[in-house]
Image 1 (cartoon, rainbow, N blue to C red):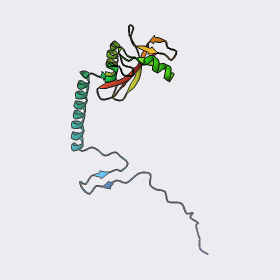
Image 2: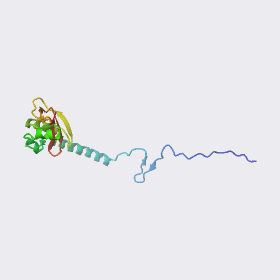
Image 3: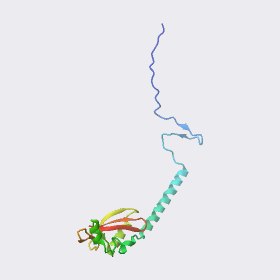
Image 4: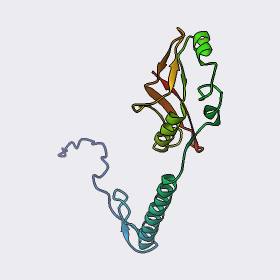
Length: 164
């Protein structure tokens, strides 16, 4: 009778570490699990790209310093919310919602705030003491505006209205 040792079958386990594979182009070994070491060309492109990106950002920042953002043309006239708008009280009553009306002084203030907003960004801001914009209320009363909502249209103009 022969002597037999029973050997259990074990599932094959992949190796924990990876064996480096030679790169046939330049004879270097590459480890797929490690990041690629940048070449001199990659470094040069990155440095040049960084300088160009920095230069473009500087130009954009300088361009925005002197750029004025004006109110939409309707606010300087007699259209809705405009400085010469006469239908504010009637619109507030018929729509049942307060209606803000700009003053020229507050339009100038809003222009300064709109410069600080990015294109298509908006926000509410408190009006400074002495502002003269008003809000027409549905009950027929008119009260001083306390804040404004404005949006930089990204086209050199802003949209907005005064509110309570």
